[in-house]
Image 1 (cartoon, rainbow, N blue to C red):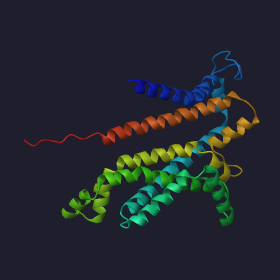
Image 2: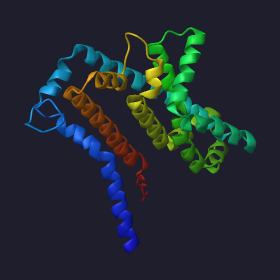
Image 3: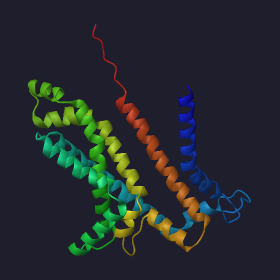
Image 4: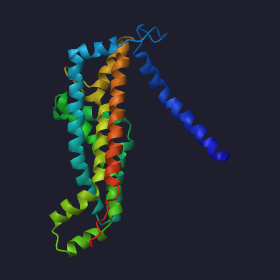
Length: 266
Protein backbone atom coordinates (compact mmCIF):
# COMPACT_ATOMS: atom_id res chain seq x y z
CA UNK A 1 0.00 0.00 0.00
CA UNK A 2 2.86 2.33 0.86
CA UNK A 3 4.63 1.59 -2.45
CA UNK A 4 1.43 2.35 -4.34
CA UNK A 5 1.09 5.67 -2.53
CA UNK A 6 4.71 6.61 -3.33
CA UNK A 7 4.17 5.61 -6.97
CA UNK A 8 1.07 7.82 -7.18
CA UNK A 9 2.91 10.77 -5.66
CA UNK A 10 5.80 10.28 -8.07
CA UNK A 11 3.38 10.11 -11.01
CA UNK A 12 1.64 13.29 -9.81
CA UNK A 13 4.97 15.15 -9.59
CA UNK A 14 5.93 14.02 -13.10
CA UNK A 15 2.63 15.27 -14.54
CA UNK A 16 2.99 18.59 -12.70
CA UNK A 17 6.49 19.09 -14.15
CA UNK A 18 5.23 18.23 -17.65
CA UNK A 19 2.01 20.24 -17.69
CA UNK A 20 2.70 23.21 -15.39
CA UNK A 21 4.60 25.21 -18.07
CA UNK A 22 1.83 24.52 -20.61
CA UNK A 23 -0.84 25.58 -18.11
CA UNK A 24 1.17 28.73 -17.30
CA UNK A 25 1.38 29.56 -21.00
CA UNK A 26 -2.36 28.99 -21.51
CA UNK A 27 -3.38 31.15 -18.54
CA UNK A 28 -1.31 34.11 -19.70
CA UNK A 29 -2.74 33.87 -23.20
CA UNK A 30 -5.80 35.59 -21.62
CA UNK A 31 -3.76 38.29 -19.85
CA UNK A 32 -4.70 41.87 -20.77
CA UNK A 33 -1.40 43.15 -19.37
CA UNK A 34 0.66 42.16 -22.39
CA UNK A 35 3.38 40.42 -20.38
CA UNK A 36 3.93 37.19 -18.46
CA UNK A 37 5.06 38.89 -15.24
CA UNK A 38 1.66 39.62 -13.70
CA UNK A 39 -1.90 38.76 -14.64
CA UNK A 40 -3.83 42.06 -14.87
CA UNK A 41 -7.14 40.93 -16.33
CA UNK A 42 -9.01 38.63 -18.68
CA UNK A 43 -9.08 39.36 -22.43
CA UNK A 44 -9.48 37.57 -25.76
CA UNK A 45 -7.55 40.23 -27.70
CA UNK A 46 -4.56 37.95 -28.30
CA UNK A 47 -6.77 35.29 -29.85
CA UNK A 48 -8.45 37.98 -31.97
CA UNK A 49 -4.99 39.10 -33.12
CA UNK A 50 -4.19 35.53 -34.15
CA UNK A 51 -7.38 35.15 -36.21
CA UNK A 52 -6.96 38.59 -37.80
CA UNK A 53 -3.50 37.68 -39.10
CA UNK A 54 -4.02 36.52 -42.71
CA UNK A 55 -0.45 35.27 -43.08
CA UNK A 56 -0.82 33.18 -39.94
CA UNK A 57 -4.07 31.63 -41.19
CA UNK A 58 -2.26 30.59 -44.41
CA UNK A 59 0.47 28.99 -42.27
CA UNK A 60 -2.21 27.12 -40.28
CA UNK A 61 -3.67 25.85 -43.57
CA UNK A 62 -0.18 24.80 -44.73
CA UNK A 63 0.34 22.92 -41.48
CA UNK A 64 -2.99 21.08 -41.70
CA UNK A 65 -2.50 20.14 -45.36
CA UNK A 66 1.03 18.83 -44.69
CA UNK A 67 -0.16 16.90 -41.62
CA UNK A 68 -3.18 15.29 -43.31
CA UNK A 69 -1.34 14.42 -46.53
CA UNK A 70 1.75 13.04 -44.78
CA UNK A 71 -0.39 11.06 -42.30
CA UNK A 72 -2.53 9.54 -45.08
CA UNK A 73 0.40 8.63 -47.35
CA UNK A 74 2.58 7.35 -44.49
CA UNK A 75 -0.33 5.24 -43.21
CA UNK A 76 -0.68 3.53 -46.60
CA UNK A 77 3.08 2.97 -46.89
CA UNK A 78 3.35 1.90 -43.25
CA UNK A 79 0.59 -0.70 -43.56
CA UNK A 80 2.24 -2.12 -46.69
CA UNK A 81 5.60 -2.16 -44.90
CA UNK A 82 4.19 -3.83 -41.78
CA UNK A 83 2.46 -6.55 -43.84
CA UNK A 84 5.68 -7.10 -45.84
CA UNK A 85 7.77 -7.40 -42.65
CA UNK A 86 5.21 -9.76 -41.12
CA UNK A 87 5.43 -12.18 -44.05
CA UNK A 88 9.23 -12.24 -44.28
CA UNK A 89 10.06 -15.84 -43.38
CA UNK A 90 13.77 -15.49 -42.58
CA UNK A 91 14.10 -14.32 -38.97
CA UNK A 92 17.41 -12.59 -39.59
CA UNK A 93 15.99 -10.57 -42.47
CA UNK A 94 12.89 -9.67 -40.42
CA UNK A 95 15.02 -8.46 -37.50
CA UNK A 96 17.18 -6.42 -39.87
CA UNK A 97 14.14 -4.71 -41.37
CA UNK A 98 12.71 -3.98 -37.91
CA UNK A 99 16.06 -2.55 -36.78
CA UNK A 100 16.26 -0.29 -39.83
CA UNK A 101 12.69 0.86 -39.14
CA UNK A 102 13.43 1.58 -35.48
CA UNK A 103 16.62 3.51 -36.27
CA UNK A 104 14.54 6.31 -37.83
CA UNK A 105 12.40 6.53 -34.71
CA UNK A 106 15.27 6.80 -32.22
CA UNK A 107 17.54 8.96 -34.41
CA UNK A 108 17.80 12.62 -33.30
CA UNK A 109 15.54 14.96 -35.27
CA UNK A 110 18.47 17.28 -35.93
CA UNK A 111 20.36 14.48 -37.71
CA UNK A 112 17.29 13.52 -39.75
CA UNK A 113 16.61 17.14 -40.69
CA UNK A 114 20.21 17.81 -41.71
CA UNK A 115 20.28 14.58 -43.74
CA UNK A 116 17.13 15.56 -45.64
CA UNK A 117 18.51 19.05 -46.26
CA UNK A 118 21.66 17.58 -47.82
CA UNK A 119 19.63 15.07 -49.84
CA UNK A 120 17.20 17.66 -51.23
CA UNK A 121 20.09 19.98 -52.08
CA UNK A 122 21.93 17.23 -53.98
CA UNK A 123 18.83 15.96 -55.79
CA UNK A 124 17.71 19.49 -56.64
CA UNK A 125 14.36 19.53 -54.85
CA UNK A 126 13.41 23.10 -53.98
CA UNK A 127 12.89 23.65 -50.26
CA UNK A 128 9.24 24.32 -49.52
CA UNK A 129 5.99 22.36 -49.60
CA UNK A 130 7.41 19.29 -51.36
CA UNK A 131 10.51 18.96 -49.17
CA UNK A 132 8.49 19.32 -45.96
CA UNK A 133 5.88 16.79 -47.14
CA UNK A 134 8.49 14.20 -48.15
CA UNK A 135 10.40 14.55 -44.88
CA UNK A 136 7.21 14.24 -42.79
CA UNK A 137 6.21 11.11 -44.70
CA UNK A 138 9.67 9.65 -44.14
CA UNK A 139 9.67 10.02 -40.35
CA UNK A 140 5.99 9.03 -40.04
CA UNK A 141 6.17 5.69 -41.89
CA UNK A 142 8.21 3.93 -39.14
CA UNK A 143 5.67 5.10 -36.55
CA UNK A 144 2.80 3.55 -38.52
CA UNK A 145 4.77 0.29 -38.93
CA UNK A 146 5.30 0.09 -35.16
CA UNK A 147 1.57 0.66 -34.55
CA UNK A 148 0.35 -1.89 -37.10
CA UNK A 149 2.81 -4.75 -36.49
CA UNK A 150 1.44 -5.75 -33.03
CA UNK A 151 -2.06 -6.16 -34.49
CA UNK A 152 -0.67 -8.35 -37.29
CA UNK A 153 1.23 -10.45 -34.75
CA UNK A 154 -1.91 -10.73 -32.62
CA UNK A 155 -3.87 -12.01 -35.61
CA UNK A 156 -1.45 -14.87 -36.28
CA UNK A 157 -1.63 -17.23 -39.23
CA UNK A 158 -4.58 -19.41 -38.14
CA UNK A 159 -7.19 -16.89 -39.28
CA UNK A 160 -5.55 -16.50 -42.68
CA UNK A 161 -5.21 -20.27 -43.15
CA UNK A 162 -8.89 -20.70 -42.31
CA UNK A 163 -9.84 -18.07 -44.91
CA UNK A 164 -7.74 -19.83 -47.56
CA UNK A 165 -9.32 -23.18 -46.65
CA UNK A 166 -12.75 -21.62 -47.23
CA UNK A 167 -11.74 -20.61 -50.75
CA UNK A 168 -10.76 -16.95 -50.24
CA UNK A 169 -8.27 -15.48 -52.68
CA UNK A 170 -5.20 -13.52 -51.52
CA UNK A 171 -7.00 -10.24 -52.27
CA UNK A 172 -10.07 -11.35 -50.28
CA UNK A 173 -7.86 -12.35 -47.37
CA UNK A 174 -6.16 -8.93 -47.40
CA UNK A 175 -9.32 -6.81 -47.78
CA UNK A 176 -11.83 -8.88 -45.79
CA UNK A 177 -9.69 -10.48 -43.10
CA UNK A 178 -6.36 -8.72 -42.54
CA UNK A 179 -7.32 -5.05 -42.96
CA UNK A 180 -10.52 -5.21 -40.84
CA UNK A 181 -8.58 -6.98 -38.06
CA UNK A 182 -5.75 -4.42 -37.97
CA UNK A 183 -8.05 -1.37 -38.29
CA UNK A 184 -7.35 -0.17 -34.70
CA UNK A 185 -3.62 -0.26 -35.47
CA UNK A 186 -4.17 1.65 -38.71
CA UNK A 187 -6.13 4.36 -36.89
CA UNK A 188 -3.45 4.52 -34.20
CA UNK A 189 -0.74 4.91 -36.81
CA UNK A 190 -2.68 7.62 -38.68
CA UNK A 191 -3.36 9.71 -35.58
CA UNK A 192 0.21 9.33 -34.30
CA UNK A 193 1.59 10.37 -37.70
CA UNK A 194 -0.82 13.32 -37.77
CA UNK A 195 0.23 14.44 -34.28
CA UNK A 196 3.95 14.07 -35.00
CA UNK A 197 3.58 16.10 -38.19
CA UNK A 198 1.66 18.89 -36.46
CA UNK A 199 4.17 19.16 -33.61
CA UNK A 200 7.40 18.64 -35.53
CA UNK A 201 9.86 21.50 -35.47
CA UNK A 202 13.45 20.25 -35.81
CA UNK A 203 13.08 18.40 -39.13
CA UNK A 204 10.75 21.05 -40.61
CA UNK A 205 13.13 23.84 -39.63
CA UNK A 206 15.85 22.31 -41.80
CA UNK A 207 13.76 21.55 -44.90
CA UNK A 208 11.39 24.51 -45.09
CA UNK A 209 12.16 27.31 -47.54
CA UNK A 210 11.39 30.97 -48.10
CA UNK A 211 7.69 31.62 -48.57
CA UNK A 212 6.58 28.41 -46.85
CA UNK A 213 6.30 27.76 -43.11
CA UNK A 214 4.44 25.65 -40.56
CA UNK A 215 3.05 26.57 -37.16
CA UNK A 216 5.94 25.16 -35.15
CA UNK A 217 8.53 27.10 -37.18
CA UNK A 218 6.37 30.26 -37.07
CA UNK A 219 6.02 30.06 -33.28
CA UNK A 220 9.80 29.70 -32.95
CA UNK A 221 10.41 32.66 -35.28
CA UNK A 222 7.98 34.89 -33.36
CA UNK A 223 9.42 33.85 -29.99
CA UNK A 224 12.90 34.96 -31.15
CA UNK A 225 11.56 38.44 -31.95
CA UNK A 226 10.40 39.03 -28.38
CA UNK A 227 7.65 38.15 -25.95
CA UNK A 228 4.15 38.52 -27.37
CA UNK A 229 1.08 36.91 -25.86
CA UNK A 230 -0.19 36.14 -29.36
CA UNK A 231 2.45 33.35 -29.25
CA UNK A 232 0.73 32.05 -26.11
CA UNK A 233 -2.64 32.13 -27.85
CA UNK A 234 -1.27 30.39 -30.93
CA UNK A 235 0.49 27.72 -28.85
CA UNK A 236 -2.66 27.17 -26.80
CA UNK A 237 -4.75 26.60 -29.93
CA UNK A 238 -2.20 24.13 -31.29
CA UNK A 239 -2.06 22.26 -27.97
CA UNK A 240 -5.86 22.05 -27.72
CA UNK A 241 -6.11 20.79 -31.30
CA UNK A 242 -3.60 18.05 -30.48
CA UNK A 243 -5.64 17.11 -27.39
CA UNK A 244 -8.77 16.84 -29.56
CA UNK A 245 -6.91 14.48 -31.90
CA UNK A 246 -5.80 12.29 -29.00
CA UNK A 247 -9.33 12.14 -27.56
CA UNK A 248 -10.74 11.37 -31.01
CA UNK A 249 -8.26 8.53 -31.45
CA UNK A 250 -9.15 7.19 -27.98
CA UNK A 251 -12.87 7.00 -28.74
CA UNK A 252 -12.29 5.48 -32.21
CA UNK A 253 -9.94 2.90 -30.70
CA UNK A 254 -12.44 2.05 -27.96
CA UNK A 255 -15.21 1.61 -30.52
CA UNK A 256 -13.03 -0.53 -32.79
CA UNK A 257 -11.78 -2.80 -30.01
CA UNK A 258 -15.21 -3.26 -28.40
CA UNK A 259 -16.32 -6.90 -28.88
CA UNK A 260 -19.38 -7.19 -31.07
CA UNK A 261 -22.31 -9.18 -29.83
CA UNK A 262 -22.94 -12.50 -31.48
CA UNK A 263 -26.43 -13.08 -32.72
CA UNK A 264 -28.03 -16.28 -31.45
CA UNK A 265 -30.15 -18.11 -33.99
CA UNK A 266 -33.32 -19.61 -32.58
